[in-house]
Image 1 (tube, rainbow, N blue to C red):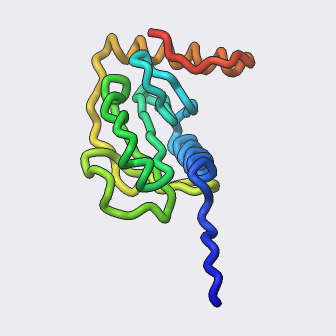
Image 2: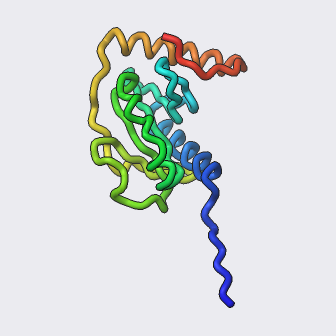
Length: 152
């Protein structure tokens, strides 16, 4: 009798690994990422990052096909970023994710941008408010405060 062992990590492990790799990629690209940022609309971004020129990215981590199929909240992130990316593990099925968003493939060591996201620049007033809220959230976390919400 043959025994088949599935060596792929569980959904939570995959989420952790992909989030770590995507965050490392963002740092390598010059971005300052924060994980699990609750947006003003109540949705939580897996990663939100501020770029060296003030651009704002949101990255939605998908642990697998089922996670993508049941979780459609990512459409509500657009008002809070210039660019939106999905981040997936290397074993995620190709061609399933929508082409109109960026794509990152990541593991625990890093990642690669497979498809660039189209840029939809934020309005200047929204950018300023988001940048200040992002900076305050980062400072609170650096001070050891368990903060998650972006307050505009």
